[in-house]
Length: 428
Image 1 (cartoon, rainbow, N blue to C red):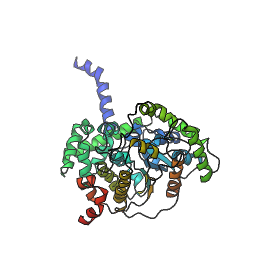
Image 2: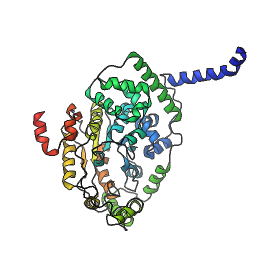
Image 3: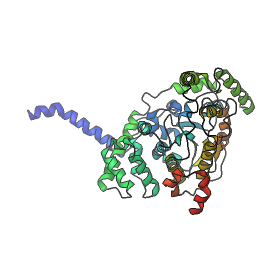
Image 4: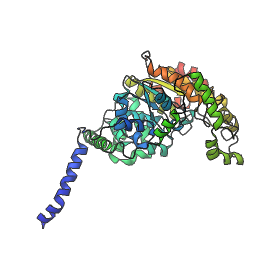
């Protein structure tokens, strides 16, 4: 009987053992070559699987793609979108869009963990949305949607005993997603407490990382969405053959005018009809943001994680601060004074640490056809951004000198009013 059972189940058991051995092996087998077409699809896909994974990002960034960190703005693909302009005019770079609706600094910090080799001594673009800096910071459900055990395991296998990783562990422990793996959760608790990982934890994390890496290689590119690449191709056909900023700016104004005819906010009719029209009729949105503030938020310290990671890797970064549609701002009562104070605070955090490449467009919210909706650039806005992005990425830049500070992880900084900056600096 035992022999009969062995003949029946033996091959299955052996196969399971072999599969486990392959997945747990530290050897990278290179199961799947990433084609040029796959890289182009992935670079604009905004796919959660691409964001969580490693293999496709690593391959594309090694082939000359540049990481563009951000969130929902990347989905606003019109003829002036960074991916469209780079393709149409055969730039020396192609944007790899990292982010979608709900991604903020904490997610982006973990995204960086398994592409460190592709960030070291390279360039990147980072979109800083004021809307991230609300009182509660990143939403837990949004963070959980993009959470990656692979990225977390990768980070824990090479973490350092410093304030950066200790803060990252504490923040991750506040997210329900951290409990998805009991052993990783226990390791995070030790890191947050400033303790070393146990021998068993290190072994588990390395094995888990190997398994997840092999799985990522197996499944990279499966069901990779291609609709955004098709959109990029279609939008590129609307552009003139030769690049001319003035001609493109006129075209952007024409396209914006055609797309924004039925609402008082000069935003896309499509967006207005589907997202705002009925709410505007009810009056529910009038002055609904008058008490909203972007000045006190844990996001400031989450953002610092990204700055410290860039500093560790000597990554030269161009930061983009977008405007808010001024018509919308006035309608909803969003404080202009508060927005200027936010700008002041984020500038201080960047420039006091040597991050001086900043495209500050916060005063462009009243420029016609600069915004495609209430908070996202479009048409002429994308073109203005491109005017700074293209030379930053294609021309040699002075080597940045970063000098980061752990003070930006303190609660005091998260809650600090910009009017207190001078006193804050003196006390430090």
